[in-house]
Length: 370
Image (cartoon, rainbow, N blue to C red; front, side):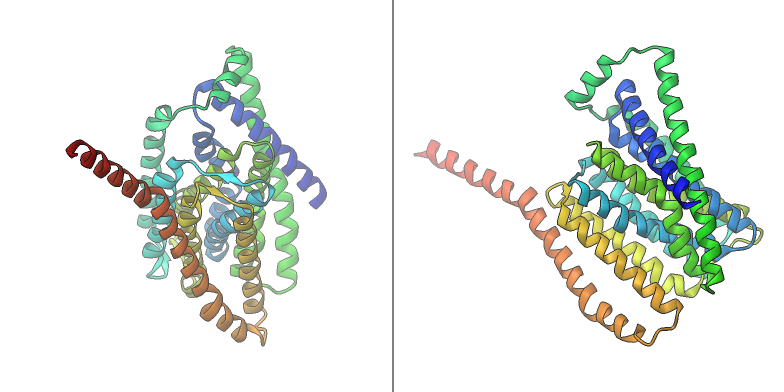
């Protein structure tokens, strides 16, 4: 099941990126908007299906762990690998709107789940916010500007019903391949993990989270290789927003008595999700791109996070030393580095140009006075 699943993922990601990027050009919508909407929501379909089904069956650990784990995977592993393939350009729209929205939704989840449960009322609130976000995105999509190359590509395609039908077919075929390929991989992995005695929470945070994020991984890496880097970044940010608002919202609504949230999830994994979401802002803002070394750093942190989960689930003797090393050295140093990165980027982007402009105005005033 793994081999055909991987083939479907690769093929589905290729069809989805090709169809979505061409449809964006044809409709006059920038790829970043398509990445934030059609591609992001489409590649998050496995998370939606798995979490709703798990919540309905009374398996909240898998449902919530799937979303939190997928959001961590999206940022650290998927963005990281995509940036290692090719540095990713980040649009100003993402920095101003979607990244703060992603951070806000992560904080909202933590606040709603702080009492240890996501009730149906909490789910309804998340769904209402998601609907408002969709309406706002649809309203503002046309205000974005296309690049000259995208305008030329749109002009080269005939605007006929058959063209739209072919592109829609590519997108639907791509989504179907991604969902089916993920499902085959998840079934085998979950069965193997349970046979090894791993808890449902850890399964949701790792096996299921990575499995349901494989469409995002395939789509983002292929988009990066094809040069559609706006789709690559927009896909990840949009998927995280979709996961938190829509997947958790609908899962809470269908759960018979709401969804319980494990204390271990709130103490560690939810905090990690908020932390990696916050880390996006200084990384994105620094030069408006994710560099290769930053991508490699993201991947390294995902490996470190996975190692912690393995040590925790197996009650390994090295867990305490590993936690101390990460908590007192690695994470504080990373926080300081990110803070300095943000300060230097802010100085370069805003403060320095203003100082130069002020100095130039002062020299002009002095020259007129003389």
